[in-house]
View (cartoon, rainbow, N blue to C red):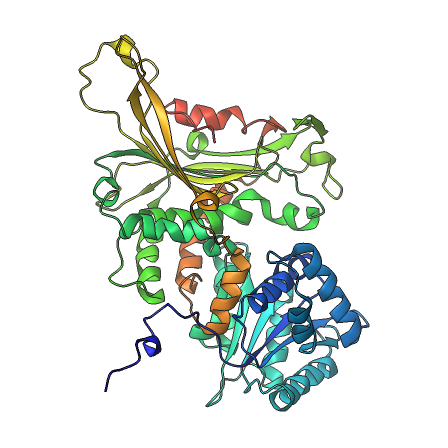
Length: 505
C-alpha cells in the first residue's frame, strides 16, 4: 500500500489548520485587539486557516452584548484587515463572535465566562480547546490568572488543550520577570505558555534563518574572521503618542532593547540548529543570550537619549517633556544605544551595536553585517576613495528584503571602484503578500507551534543584559537630541572612537 504523502506531518503542501477551538481575548476593546488581533482573526478566516468549529470570545468592562461586540469587530476589521473584505467570510465569523462583560476582579463574570466556554463546546463543537490572550497591562496578569485557575479554565484535561498568550513587557527587571514567570507557570504548564514578541512573526525575521542555513553562500563568512561589526537598528519616526503612562515607567531599553533587539541579535549570532524545531532553535538562541557581554566602560558604550522639539518630515515635533502626561523633569530615555559582545568562538571580538529610538528621521528596522575591508588592495588610494565596507543588510521593515553592498568598477577609462547595491524586495519577488506578524503568531498559538515564542530562560537571560544598564543609568539625565536627528552625538562618538560609524538606513 502506497502511503498518502499529504498525511505526512512534515509535508507543507497543504496548509495546517488548527483543531476546533475558541480564542478568548481579555481586553478586547483595547488598541491592540482592534488594530491587530481582530483583523488577524479575520485574515486567517479569509485564507481558510481557521477550523470550521471556531469561536471568538471577548471579555471587557464595557456593558455590551454580542451585537455591540460584533459591530466593533466588523469596524476594526474593515479598517485594519490585510486581506480584502468578503461579506460571506464575515457572516460565518460573526456567528461565532461572543462577548462577556465584567471586570477582572469580578468572580461572577469569570464564572459566566467559564460557563460560556462550556456552552460553546456544544453549540460550536470546539471540543473544549481554548487559547486565552492577555491583551491587558502586566499588572493585571496575577488577578486574571488566579481567576482562570479558580474557575478551572486553565486546566488541561485528557482530550482538550488550554493555552495562554502573554504580551510584553515580561516584567520590568530580572526579579519581576522571574516572579511573573513563576506565576504563569503555576497556572499553565510550560508548554502551554506563549510569550509573544511580534517581531519574531515578521517574514523577514524568519527569512534570516533561511538566508543563513538554506544557502551555502553566506554561512562561511558569517563569523568574526570576516565580519567587522554588526549593527541592529530599530528607528521610529513617531513619538510616544498616548502611551505616556506606560512609557514613563518603561523607557526605550525596557520597551524594545530587552526583547525585540536582543531577539534579533540572538537569531543573527546563533549556531545552526540540528533541526528546524521550536526546542532546537530556542536552545541555540539561549546559548547566544547567555554569551552576551557588556562593555567595561558603560559611560562611553551605553548611551541613552531623549528627544527635544525639532522638525520631522516638514512638521514641527514637540519634545518628549512636552508630551501629554510626561513630567517636566522626566529622565526617561526615548533612545538607547549599546555596544555588546558575544563571547563565542564564532563572534569573539566582534562588536554588536544595538540602537533604538523615537522621533528619528524615518521608520526602519534592519540588521547590518559590516564586513572587514580586503586585506590587500592592488589599487592606488585614489582608485578606492569611494569604496566602503561590504555590507549585508536584512531589512525587517518597512521595505522588507535584503541588500548586498559591494565594490564595483565605475565605467570609464580609469580604475575607480565605488559601492553598489543589489536589492531583493519581498514585494517584487513574490506574488503573495506577507502575512502580518500577529496573523502568523495567532495561528501558531492555535496549532501549538512554539518555534517563534521565547521561553522563560530567554526572557531572564535578556533581563540579565539590561539590568546592569538600567542600574548604571539610574539617576542620570539622558543625552538630548532634536526630533528628526539620528540620536544624540554621544552615540556617534561611541562608534567613532573605534574608527566606525553608524550605517545610514
